[in-house]
Amino acid sequence: MNDKETLVKKTIFSGVQPSGMLTVGNYLGSIKNWKEFEETYNCLYCVVDLHAITVRQDPATLRRRTYETLALYIASGLDPEKNTLFVQSHVPAHAELSWVLNCYAMHGELSRMTQFKDKSKKYASNINAGLFTYPVLMAADILLYQTDLVPVGIDQMQHIELTRDIANRFNQVYGDTFRMPEGFIPKAGAKIMSLAEPEKKMSKSDTNGNASVYILDSRDDIIRKFKRAVTDSDTVVRRAEGKDGINNLMTIYTAFTGKSDADIEAEFAGLGYGHFKLAVGEVVADALAPVHAEFDRLMADKAYLEGVMKDGAAKAAYLARKTLSKVYRKVGFTQPK
Ligand code: TYM
Image 1 (cartoon, protein in one colour):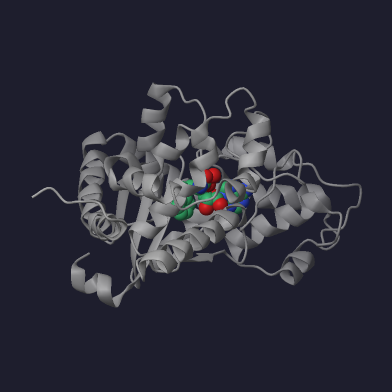
Image 2 (tube, rainbow, N blue to C red):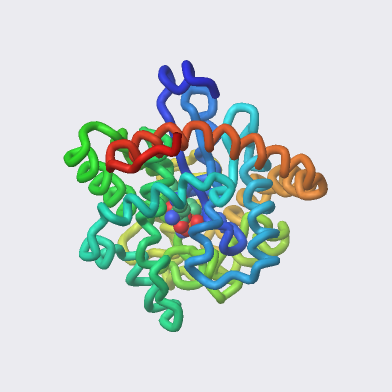
C-alpha cells in the first residue's frame, strides 16, 4: 500500500484477540467477510494482543495463539500481499494514541459499555483498569489508520459508536483530525449463538466445550457438536420467535451456503431436526476443511509467518506514525529536534 493508494482507496481496519481458540462465531462475524474487501480497500487486519492481556493469559499460550490467529487470517483467504496483516504490540503507536485518547474518553461512557459490565462479572477477581479502558485502545486501533469501515460482529458495535464519540470530541477541540469510521455487519452471521445455550453469544472463552464450535475443530467434533446442539420440542425446521437454537442453526447454514430461510425450510420439510443438524455440521466441516489444511501448512513455516508480521508491522507503523504525529502536534507536545 503506498501513499497514492491510501488517498484513492477507502480504509478498512479490524482485529481479533488471540485470547482463545477462534470460533465459528469469530469466523462468520469477521474473518470470513474480510477477503471481499481486499481489491477495493486498503485493508489492515490486526492480531490484537494488547487487548488480550486485559484477561490473564498464559504467556506461552498467548505467543502460540498470536501465530495461530495470524495463520488463520491467511488460511481464511487473506493475501498478505494485498492486506496489511500485523500484530498490535509490534506497532507502538496503538498504545501511544490510546493514552492520548484516554484523556478524551469519559469515565461515565466507559462504565456503560456492555462488554465491560459482562467481563467484570465473569472475571470479578481481576477488574483491572485495562479492562475498563479496553474500548479506548480499540478506538486508537481504528482512528490511527483514518479508517472508513470496521467489519465486526454486532457485539463490537457499541465500541465503534464510542470510537465515533471520542473522534468527534477530539475533532471539535482540535479541528479535523480523525476520519469518522462506520461499523460493517455481515447479513448472516453478525451474532452466532452458543450451541448449548442458544440465547447466549458463542464465545471463545466459554468453558463448555460443546457450546462453541472452533474453527480448528476436527470434522468429527464439528459434526458431533452440531448433532448435540440444543433446539426445542417442535420438529419443523423454520425460523420463529422462541426457537433460538433452530434460528441459530439456520443462520449458520445461510452464512455458509447463501441459502435463504425459505430455501432451508423447503429443503428440510418433513425431515426433522436430526437431519438438519447433521446437514449444518457437514456444511461447516466441508467449508472449514481447506482452512485447516492451509493452517497446518502455515504453522509449519514460522519463518514465513514472522516475515508477514514484520512486513505488516512496518507498513502499519508508517501509516500510524502520520496520524500520531498530527495528534501530538495538535495537543501541544514538543518534537525532539
Ligand atoms: P473478539 O476477539 O472478541 O472477536 C473478533 C471478531 O469476532 C466477532 N464475534 C462474533 N461474531 C458473530 N457471532 C459471535 N458469536 C461472535 N463472537 C465474536 C466480533 O464481533 C469481532 O468482530 N474488541 C474486539 C477486537 C478489536 C477490534 C479492534 C475489532 C480490537 N480492536 C478494532 C475491530 C476494530 C474483540 O474483542 O473481538
